[in-house]
Image 1 (cartoon, rainbow, N blue to C red):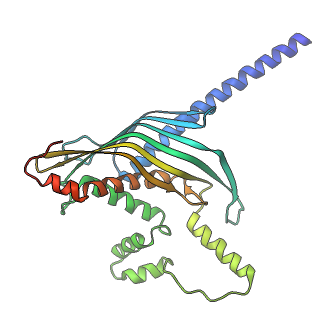
Image 2 (image 1 turned 30 degrees about the vertical axis):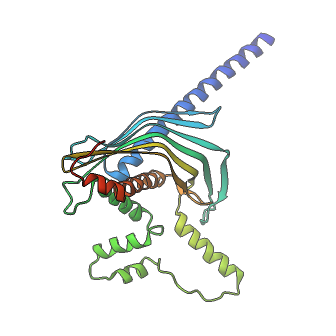
Image 3 (image 1 turned 120 degrees about the horizontal axis):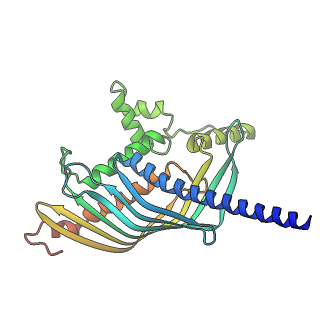
Length: 291
């Protein structure tokens, strides 16, 4: 009987370990697929990621060799790449909130303490598909911003209204804003607390949507950024260290499917701000450039 009990315990331990291993492996595959899918969805460019590895012991997810392909017809095959990205979970990584829905489902908030890109290398050059002088970085920024506005109109009211007005030219932008119900209005003072609470719940539901998993990141950091600017057969390389991109998501977090787009948008915005700086413009327009 004792031998059978020991054997049963050993088998239970073995199968539990195997289940944990399979679950952990599935998590890594899921993380990798989400990085690739969200990057491709928001940018409409091919994304690659060599590996994703989450450690239960440290609460850190490591992403290795991420790259995003460049717009067709340009000299560089890659728009930007990051050799190593790490995401550190907070001490209390999970918070459960009551979702503002009829079903009363629970929303899970995942807290990431820090997202750090070890090194990021990007290439900026004038886009040949654009009628203006915008760069590939600017073109991709507009593409990502438009996709975010289409998917989350309540969070991007102005862009959503402009997009809506283009779809329905007979309507003005002002009417589009009113139709989307996103224009600021002066509300009458309500004395009935139940009505106030109901309106707040509806507003929260409109902003949060139906997402049951949301993410908030306290800090996003790029240790070292290298931006190579190609213009008029000239090449300028700019290095910037310790870039702080701030936090992502308030106490309600971001839709987990929205996170990839928001990160791409902020990285591209930072690249644009660097290439449009006065110093860079002066250097790129001089006869001789030293990189």
